[in-house]
Image (cartoon, rainbow, N blue to C red; front, side, top):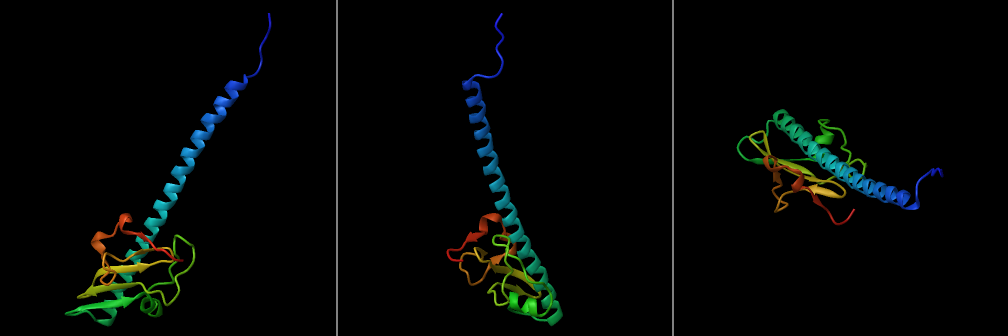
Length: 145
Protein backbone atom coordinates (compact mmCIF):
# COMPACT_ATOMS: atom_id res chain seq x y z
CA UNK A 1 0.00 0.00 0.00
CA UNK A 2 1.39 3.41 -1.05
CA UNK A 3 0.89 6.19 1.42
CA UNK A 4 0.39 9.74 0.05
CA UNK A 5 1.42 12.66 2.32
CA UNK A 6 1.01 16.40 1.70
CA UNK A 7 -1.03 18.48 -0.71
CA UNK A 8 -1.03 18.67 -4.46
CA UNK A 9 0.08 21.80 -6.25
CA UNK A 10 -3.51 22.57 -7.29
CA UNK A 11 -4.73 22.40 -3.69
CA UNK A 12 -2.00 24.79 -2.53
CA UNK A 13 -2.76 27.23 -5.38
CA UNK A 14 -6.49 27.11 -4.58
CA UNK A 15 -5.81 28.00 -0.94
CA UNK A 16 -3.51 30.87 -1.98
CA UNK A 17 -6.11 32.28 -4.39
CA UNK A 18 -8.89 32.08 -1.78
CA UNK A 19 -6.67 33.71 0.85
CA UNK A 20 -5.79 36.51 -1.61
CA UNK A 21 -9.46 37.19 -2.34
CA UNK A 22 -10.32 37.29 1.36
CA UNK A 23 -7.37 39.59 2.07
CA UNK A 24 -8.37 42.07 -0.67
CA UNK A 25 -11.97 42.19 0.60
CA UNK A 26 -10.73 42.73 4.17
CA UNK A 27 -8.35 45.51 3.10
CA UNK A 28 -11.15 47.33 1.28
CA UNK A 29 -13.40 47.08 4.33
CA UNK A 30 -10.65 48.45 6.58
CA UNK A 31 -10.10 51.42 4.23
CA UNK A 32 -13.84 52.15 4.22
CA UNK A 33 -13.99 51.96 8.01
CA UNK A 34 -11.04 54.34 8.35
CA UNK A 35 -12.66 56.88 5.99
CA UNK A 36 -15.98 56.68 7.84
CA UNK A 37 -14.13 57.27 11.13
CA UNK A 38 -12.39 60.32 9.69
CA UNK A 39 -15.69 61.72 8.40
CA UNK A 40 -17.27 61.17 11.82
CA UNK A 41 -14.34 62.93 13.51
CA UNK A 42 -14.77 65.88 11.13
CA UNK A 43 -18.48 66.05 11.98
CA UNK A 44 -17.64 65.89 15.69
CA UNK A 45 -15.32 68.86 15.19
CA UNK A 46 -18.18 70.77 13.57
CA UNK A 47 -20.40 70.07 16.58
CA UNK A 48 -17.62 71.12 18.97
CA UNK A 49 -17.34 74.42 17.13
CA UNK A 50 -21.13 74.78 17.33
CA UNK A 51 -21.05 74.48 21.11
CA UNK A 52 -18.07 76.84 21.38
CA UNK A 53 -19.93 79.40 19.23
CA UNK A 54 -22.97 79.07 21.48
CA UNK A 55 -20.79 79.78 24.54
CA UNK A 56 -19.15 82.69 22.73
CA UNK A 57 -22.55 84.20 21.91
CA UNK A 58 -23.80 83.91 25.49
CA UNK A 59 -20.53 85.28 26.81
CA UNK A 60 -20.56 88.26 24.44
CA UNK A 61 -24.35 88.76 24.43
CA UNK A 62 -24.32 89.19 20.69
CA UNK A 63 -26.76 88.02 18.07
CA UNK A 64 -29.84 89.58 19.65
CA UNK A 65 -31.83 90.47 16.53
CA UNK A 66 -29.62 89.68 13.59
CA UNK A 67 -27.28 87.01 12.26
CA UNK A 68 -23.72 87.19 13.49
CA UNK A 69 -20.60 85.28 12.66
CA UNK A 70 -17.83 83.89 14.83
CA UNK A 71 -14.60 82.53 13.37
CA UNK A 72 -12.37 79.66 14.39
CA UNK A 73 -9.66 82.23 15.16
CA UNK A 74 -11.92 84.11 17.60
CA UNK A 75 -12.87 80.88 19.38
CA UNK A 76 -9.19 79.98 19.77
CA UNK A 77 -8.23 83.43 21.07
CA UNK A 78 -11.15 83.45 23.53
CA UNK A 79 -9.97 80.10 24.90
CA UNK A 80 -13.26 78.36 24.14
CA UNK A 81 -11.58 75.62 22.12
CA UNK A 82 -8.10 74.27 21.68
CA UNK A 83 -6.54 73.96 18.27
CA UNK A 84 -8.34 71.30 16.24
CA UNK A 85 -6.56 68.40 14.59
CA UNK A 86 -7.58 67.66 11.01
CA UNK A 87 -8.62 63.97 11.02
CA UNK A 88 -7.58 63.53 7.39
CA UNK A 89 -4.00 64.82 7.71
CA UNK A 90 -3.33 64.66 11.45
CA UNK A 91 -2.15 68.29 11.44
CA UNK A 92 -3.51 71.03 13.69
CA UNK A 93 -5.58 73.74 12.05
CA UNK A 94 -3.69 77.01 11.89
CA UNK A 95 -4.92 79.99 13.93
CA UNK A 96 -5.96 81.83 10.78
CA UNK A 97 -8.13 78.97 9.48
CA UNK A 98 -11.12 80.49 7.64
CA UNK A 99 -13.79 78.31 9.28
CA UNK A 100 -16.76 80.11 10.80
CA UNK A 101 -20.15 79.64 12.43
CA UNK A 102 -23.18 81.83 11.73
CA UNK A 103 -25.81 82.20 14.41
CA UNK A 104 -28.85 84.21 15.31
CA UNK A 105 -30.22 84.97 18.76
CA UNK A 106 -27.32 83.13 20.36
CA UNK A 107 -28.18 79.92 18.50
CA UNK A 108 -25.77 78.56 15.88
CA UNK A 109 -27.44 78.28 12.48
CA UNK A 110 -24.75 77.04 10.11
CA UNK A 111 -21.08 76.19 9.79
CA UNK A 112 -18.34 76.39 7.23
CA UNK A 113 -15.56 74.08 8.43
CA UNK A 114 -12.46 74.08 6.24
CA UNK A 115 -9.83 71.42 6.73
CA UNK A 116 -6.70 70.88 4.70
CA UNK A 117 -8.22 68.28 2.38
CA UNK A 118 -11.96 68.33 3.19
CA UNK A 119 -14.61 70.91 4.03
CA UNK A 120 -18.25 71.37 5.00
CA UNK A 121 -19.52 74.68 3.68
CA UNK A 122 -22.90 74.21 2.04
CA UNK A 123 -23.96 74.93 -1.51
CA UNK A 124 -23.21 78.65 -1.73
CA UNK A 125 -20.13 78.68 0.49
CA UNK A 126 -21.21 82.05 1.93
CA UNK A 127 -23.88 81.02 4.40
CA UNK A 128 -22.42 77.72 5.52
CA UNK A 129 -24.28 74.46 5.97
CA UNK A 130 -27.14 74.37 8.51
CA UNK A 131 -26.32 72.15 11.47
CA UNK A 132 -29.51 70.17 10.88
CA UNK A 133 -28.11 69.04 7.50
CA UNK A 134 -24.68 67.88 8.71
CA UNK A 135 -23.89 64.41 7.42
CA UNK A 136 -21.02 62.43 5.93
CA UNK A 137 -22.45 63.04 2.46
CA UNK A 138 -22.02 66.83 2.86
CA UNK A 139 -18.27 66.57 3.42
CA UNK A 140 -16.51 67.64 0.24
CA UNK A 141 -12.94 66.96 -0.80
CA UNK A 142 -11.00 70.10 -1.68
CA UNK A 143 -8.65 70.24 -4.64
CA UNK A 144 -5.44 71.62 -3.17
CA UNK A 145 -3.65 70.81 0.08
